[in-house]
Image (cartoon, rainbow, N blue to C red; front, side):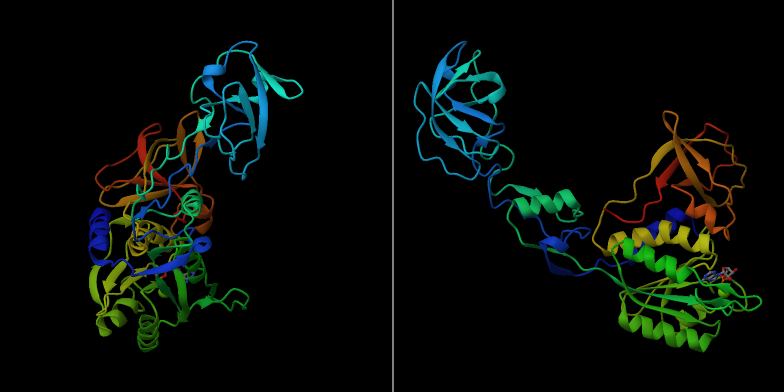
Length: 400
Ligand code: AMP
Ligand code: MG
């Protein structure tokens, strides 16, 4: 049995990052840049007005000064004249500032007569002007590789006029559920049967984390069937996730079939609650194989704690999960020796206080479903009192 920290290290060391592909602008959100982006443009592209107002010469400005309005430039119309002393040009937000002008006065700050404006006082040089290149110079490197493309990052790419980018491929992942007792939702439960939930929940998690579900299988606790399905799953995916059948029971078929397909075991069993019987191996072709415990809470918590960092790496991200410190809203009695991942809700009082949800049993999926945070209590500490500081992370699955 290894610690969670050691499991994280071994996952980082053994999970490959995907190859790259070109993807069109509007499909880039959620993907990770595989190249640096240098700007092909100055930003702003040209010197323009930040407000609706009038281009003037700052040297002309003063109280009660009259300036003749000689032209009007809407956004999108190129300046065709040079502003001279005593003149003003009507501008709108985003209009180009005409040559000769060095300031814009807001329309709220002038009186308008027939063909002139009357200023109320001095105007600073450069007032209300957005200068060409003040944000970005052509050739500046503005996005690093490994940047997660969020809506604003996509907005930057569009602002630069780019129509595609090189990003890491989405990993294709197959999911295998195991268990003689399982019936698909919609079917009929016979005595001692339950509805199968893990492949559904894990497939949803994989999609949230930027993966593509290559196949979903459900097998009986039968080594030959498991071996055949695992072989097929490996043939069509970049990684495989199995659910259940990975503890020490007689029917635990995952490690057995992995071994017979020459999947090298990197570790099995992690000192964590829930989720101890987690398996991680690598196929001969380097594909990660993750064996999740069957209890639905254990399966989802280990997917969050151990598969999520692996998927981060596969999709090209280099930042690890962000953990925050918060106050514990209730005491927790516990044994050392394993890390606990406690499901909790958060309240601002006014700082963040975390309250463990009802139903912490590893079979109690509602306690996880109602949780917003996962608290990490390390293996080397004992009981926690109300008000103690703990580290926690939001239980959001997507990276964006
Ligand atoms: P196992 O790890 O296979 O021993 O399963 C542990 C517990 O999780 C048992 O109560 C199983 O019935 C349950 N379980 C295993 N796989 C699933 C699944 N795919 N959906 C729902 N429950 C499951
Ligand atoms: Mg089972």
